[in-house]
Length: 259
Image (cartoon, rainbow, N blue to C red; front, side, top):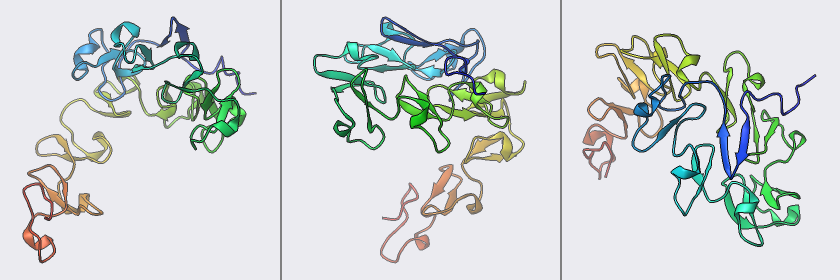
């Protein structure tokens, strides 16, 4: 028997004074990740480290400004619940924006939110699990979206950790999900130091074993589509390297584009 919705997640969403907080164990991940007590140091710019979501814009309403005063899943939003909106409006959970309240499904015109929630008067992608399918069987009430998972218990062995912010199963969310000499980068466990093989690099990157760096390409074989040439100077796949790679009336500029 499948566990009830309130038992499945390994996190608990606590709506309090318009704040939604994810409660899990220690460690920081998702994008730039870290697993210690000073994980804010690992986040770029003004981003902060949330122990469940990784590097985020906010950890509470106090981190947000007047225009978007509510912290929802690590991002500052216009509203957290319908009560945060004015008369005749509802909080639409996909973007957490105040929009005209709906009365029936016919009022919902967006493909990704075709259902009018009779309780909140907001257009959503789902209200219950039965509204979902196609590999995303669970309805996340916080986002109003069908999700692959609501907690780790919903994921398989290969990608065993659920990222509550995108509702998808991944290899890792925090560094503790990886081996001792690895870190969680973009939901992949990668080597924390010089690489020795492509498997230690993020997706769409290859390992330069001479330098120990993960790069976009080393040879033209690493590129495809409209950017078939590898520029080791720009460290990316480009449209051209030489004028002869372009049409007769065009030349190759310093950015590897024919103009």
